[in-house]
Length: 196
Image: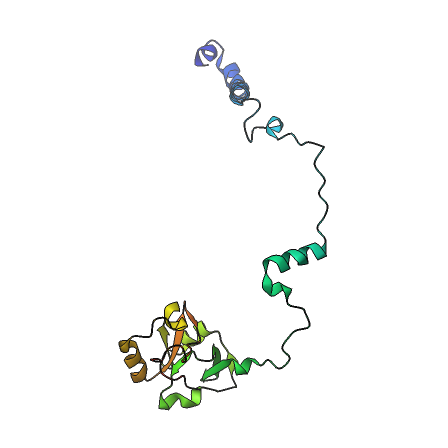
């Protein structure tokens, strides 16, 4: 390019330079773009859609419900079989402190010290999720991580864990995967009685 421009006078070379550069750039771009077959390179690369697509009938509500009944036994329960006298308070324990409360399943509380007996069963206050309550009041609750084997009664709690639970000055709550879990006493004879 410089060889061509060196023969022209300076004013002509300055006005031709942008024109030559633009035309060379356009020619390079056209030569670099391959045609056909490669994804993302134009209309040629779009898939050809057949106009003769097979027609599929829409699934009816009855067919969907039948599939649910076949694959999910709980979905087969009739709508009118709801338990009328079910009460969450019968299945939950409440731990309260300083105007806040949290709900844990019955049997999740493994130990309540004498000084905190009034904190279990408190019914008034702002309801907090377990994680927030536990992090806000670490002097009130102490989490005890248990395994699925402990909860199911296959493996009892170790003697060290039971001794630590009995000596704790905080409310001890059984946790499985970070959440309170019911710890059935009947399946694990070594577990301390849950305070209610």
